Length: 210
View 1 (tube, rainbow, N blue to C red):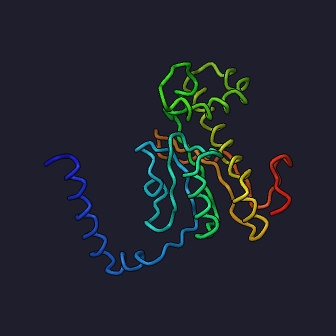
View 2: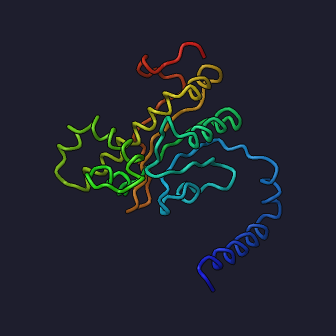
């Protein structure tokens, strides 16, 4: 059996087990989704949102990319964000990074990696802003892990800068924004930053005509 065929077989087993435990499991999900949470996470295969949080399908609306970035020119991310906020009416948006992130570590080097250079440059910008703090850390692992935390913080700030989020804040006092970091060593999520709906950010980024 090829490896991909095993995935299909496991899917059939999973689907059968769900119905055995709860005959209405799929019928509840088929017509509507009403998640309370949006999750912006890393593409790393070791960091699946549902598994980490013990949540079920339908509870978290998920977008993933390399190093859990919120980039203002990324139409994919912005489209997911707009749908989550304006259609699904999520109450919380979580940016979840993870310690030991390969994208963050790569952004700390001067190695050219081809096309992904353009994406990693956004993390390099975070490094540049916080260079004094990060470079003051001697241990390389602790240094990269601190940049992971700072990167999550900046991505939460990037969410707050969007007209999508600010409009929902003004009209409906939601969503709250959360920055978390997952530790691969023990499976625990560490909250590192938070912006509640309606909190003020730098006035330079606040829209007054929404």
